[in-house]
Length: 187
Ligand SMILES: [Fe+2]
Ligand SMILES: [Fe+2]
Image (cartoon, rainbow, N blue to C red; front, side, top):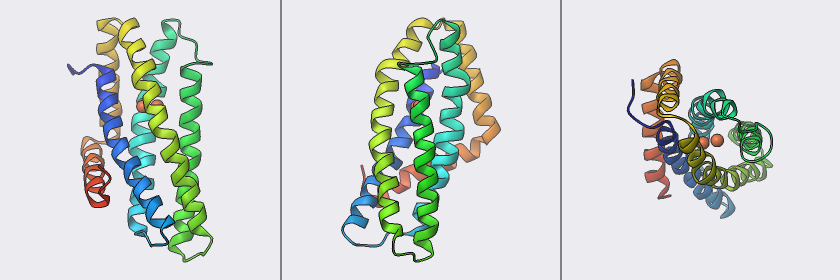
């Protein structure tokens, strides 16, 4: 059993997602300056966004937090939950585009830079705003309407999500985010 509040666990994930999003902004600037970026870094970012940000983090929100809020009478449609879910989908679409553009860039396709920039900008525009909505609207609401017992239950479910993915995998992605931020000087 964990003592961390479930929303604190999600904020901790955000902290690492923000590092990678910051690095994406630096990579976009590098491409805009006409320079090259490492293909492996782009591949690693796609993997981080698919597993850490989507499977693990969005999984905790969409599979556990949002339904817990719905049970307390918060509508799944509209503001804020419907908008947040739609933004997760938007994020998935941009990551898919980033993966395709990365493959194309790795194959030396001349038009890939433009596609890379489009998907990187899509993600760097989307995430800070999405995280703001969660941290200032959805999470304070969750802290207020979920009882201590419901919050404990949610924290246990979050731990299960982490275990399914593998605690070592989670830590590896946190380390990746830290190193990427240092490497790109995005902090
Ligand atoms: Fe989210
Ligand atoms: Fe989130």
